[in-house]
Image 1 (cartoon, rainbow, N blue to C red):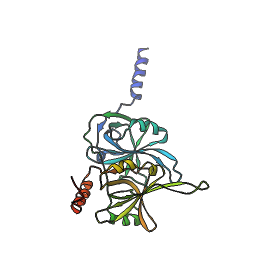
Image 2 (tube, rainbow, N blue to C red):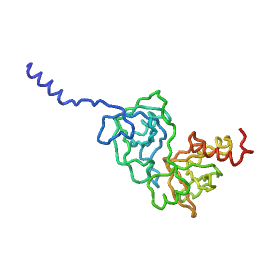
Image 3 (cartoon, helix red, strand yellow):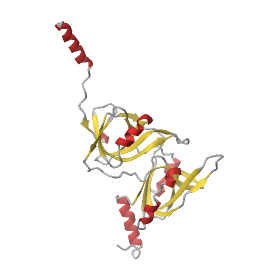
Image 4 (tube, one colour):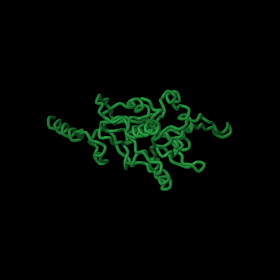
Length: 272
């Protein structure tokens, strides 16, 4: 009896794999073949991923920032959407472990990364109080780079920044017999006075922060992220996607440069 018991115990010990000891990794250190890492991140953006053009929800997506200022996208299946919408709050910092990897989709890439993180039922998130993480991440395209990006059909979505020149009211197109679409155009001007149209659609068009914008002192700097670049009426257009976010006067170097240039060109109007 004792021998049988010992053998069973030994068999059970062999059958139970050891839990790997996890260690902290920055995004640049992550390897899809290594599942022994955890990450500490700020949740920068999050959205519900959708199919185009049906706009049917397909899952949860977010962009995370590490302490070194690198960014990575993470996705979760639709069945996990509500959980991660609740567990990952914007601008909060978390330790995250138990994630996988997948090859980044070649269409509509938010970042120039080869792989994306996968969150699922084994993913654990723990809120941290450490606040020493960046608040923003952009990879802005210059105005004279937009045409080249469009010609090459660059799969990476476009970030852009400039002065707000004009904000249009929402316009509605279509009818009950087809589809109704709401559109809001915002003209963005750079230091060379080149103007590019930024277009918000449907809910994003309705939810544009008009009151907040009206309260801001001119000039207002607008940074937009993850836009689909196309042409409309012969003009370049930054079209918002489900991943698009926009920021008024973000505290970054480009904002300071734009405000300093405006102050220098119009000193009598720009009073401290």
